[in-house]
Length: 233
Image (cartoon, rainbow, N blue to C red; front, side, top):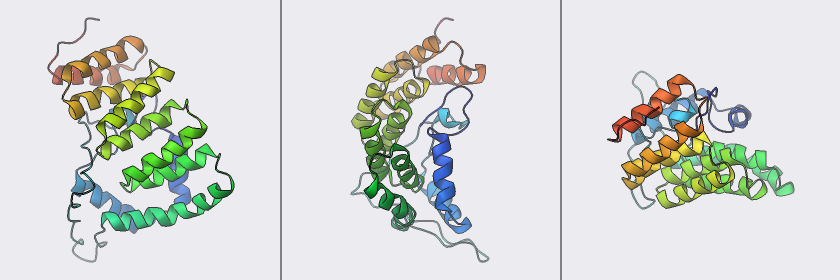
């Protein structure tokens, strides 16, 4: 998940907006997805996706683990609860037309990204990562998509896979703020490597001198929270 100076939406922001719009999620669907989001305790979006929180997302439970119980229906005629399986069915339904188009034109990277975003929005991170991967087969140097794929892998519990994708992204764009930020977060929260996270975040600050002051302050705060002194400016 991402952040860069001047951006206020997730990676592939315009594609994401288009995917959601074309999917035409109903009010009830949006409500129930948000409810499951709260129960799972997952924060879809790192600091660099526009979130003001500096907390790292929690990886999704292993596939064998039972999903948390969904919230009860809201009293007074609120929308009913929804399970992760129902959310997957929603994503399957909304993605089906695009997947049919992709059977005829499998080299449309933007459509693979739209499909991935639909599954990511419903917390189907394994499927989302798969579809981001299909887009990357077409545009392997797309750093934003590779960083987004890494986030999905992390949420799905594949810490090493997420790190590998971020390292690949940084080979293509060594100073990419989003990839550096996420790599630091995963080193810290996924690998318990606070020192490695600090090194990565200092690289982010040093290689992005035009970073907005508020974003710079947020990264410096993370460095402090990781138990390391701030780098000398």
